[in-house]
Length: 309
Image (tube, rainbow, N blue to C red; front, side):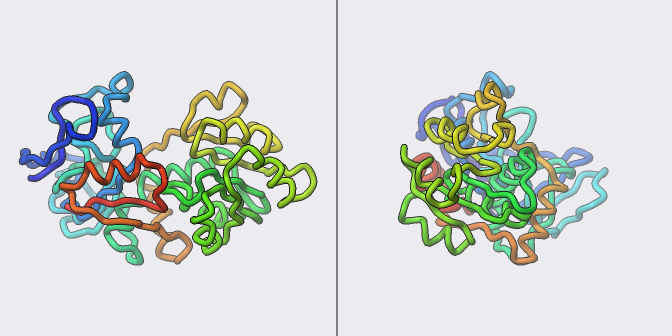
């Protein structure tokens, strides 16, 4: 199979298009013929070697944790899927080597969900990691009926899904920080947009009245936005970050998304009901993985970038 792989950690140019052996299919696994791969910031973290202290790593290493495609082979112990099924998965594994920037990828049956009929393969490939991150983060702070929720970086890959999911969970108002050029996009999702900046607390007070505080905050930026957030949420236990674990020291929550086939299936159901719509900004061929990672790392992308083998 063709795959993007690296033999050493470093800058973008360590990634090369190569011919590698087809992956094996253990008993409780399925092999997916890849149709689309969502590109995430964590892919660059893996490429740079910044996860080496957390995950065992082996080369040649194929990056990538998002996948959508068609099952071509199932292991002898698989009961829920068969060849020809259209599926998607958040393919984080216990070690770093066999990722999704490839024509074929093997994953365990339990993390796989059926592709939503309402979505293209590109949209389905963009959904797993970002969607589960948003879903698990909102659950961590118990977003529910009547809540006023603030989402930082609301037009990005995780953010634009989080604002939709917050409304699905019953939030009465969803406010999202974003640059002005993305405000109309957020309004189309039912979000009240506000600009970033040091005067965010005063702008929220003007928008909401009273003390300008919200019931829950989802931080997707870290840094100054996270510092501000402790001033903007009524109770710090309802501040969740997916960027900086240090949030826990001040009473907040941290979420590192976990693979979950059942949760991903729930997101698929919401997509088929028209209540969750992944925005794919650009589709690039697999051999342009470097360009895709650069675009994501630049930090100004609306929605998701997707690679197509």
